[in-house]
Length: 282
Image 1 (tube, rainbow, N blue to C red):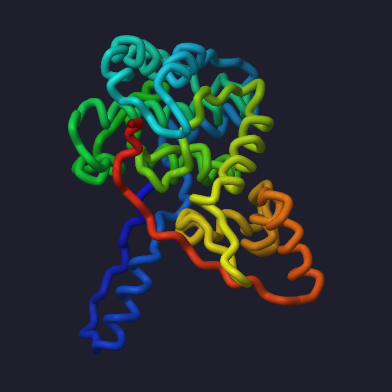
Image 2 (tube, rainbow, N blue to C red):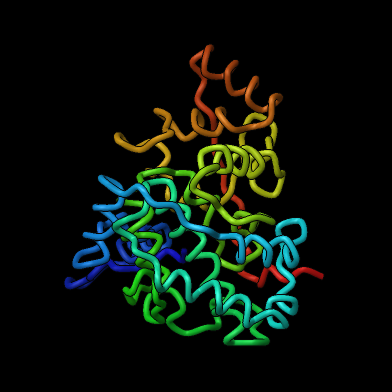
């Protein structure tokens, strides 16, 4: 979830160039790059030929009991840690290659969210997930018999193989500015409906989208991963970021965006600062 800085500098830089590089680094986000090796092959086979379903009722019950208004009561998860671990064991035992596409995507989304919660429980007392060293790129988790990181789940499996920008409102990084965690688990039989519902809810929340005069202010996620919302081959997509927002925005903002589009006026888009404090329910 956290953007990474991967630009290698070899030449001496002047101060203006240093400032430019700093600005570029600040906006860097991991690329959607398909995973190599068995896990990538399993996901590809599942997308192409999988037909099996997967039951997420254990995780669904835990979310229903512990999530309020998108915030998480981690104490409830701590009290019911054995149930969470039982669910994680089912993820480890899953046969990814046998799962039907939507069931496979739902599993990977739930795996990201469930292992994120487990990471917070394993480091009880943190005020931000960023206090956990290596939480995204070094700590590994068992999904379908493969040891994968949270970054692998998001950037090497979900984004490149499914090419769905709604992934960014479905995964939750345990932070206040993340898209809220739903009170239910993603389910392959209802996945399209759930993703549409949750994306509409995301853009209806003034914490993630609001109009400021003749400009919009939106979640930083659309700054970090803006290309995912407009790239060819991704579905759903739009030609512009404003066009994607219009599709899911509340009626008043959507109508205003349509007026701007019809008149040929550009839309200024600003981004909220990102709050990495823990999404702990009061």
